[in-house]
Image 1: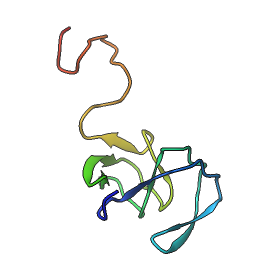
Image 2: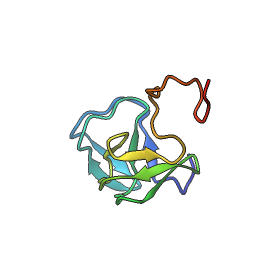
Image 3: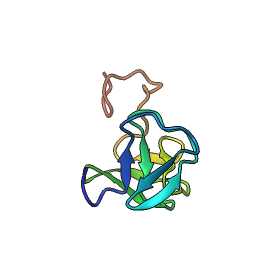
Image 4: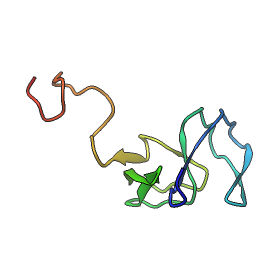
Length: 97
């Protein structure tokens, strides 16, 4: 992780309501957090950029409370529209193959 990151990665599954320390602040998690999911290190607003490992990974689309999950319901990639396969069944983004 990088000091400027505004998200954290769950190293274990965490239960909704579980209290965790985030930068010295005790936060009750609003939702269950599966292993490997991202949570907001600080409260984020729509348009905020999310940094993970010091790199920009996307933009926030809805208000996100500190400790809340960051995922496709409130975060969009700044690189690809989605992680799912495109409807046109092309092999590569930007390709006709």
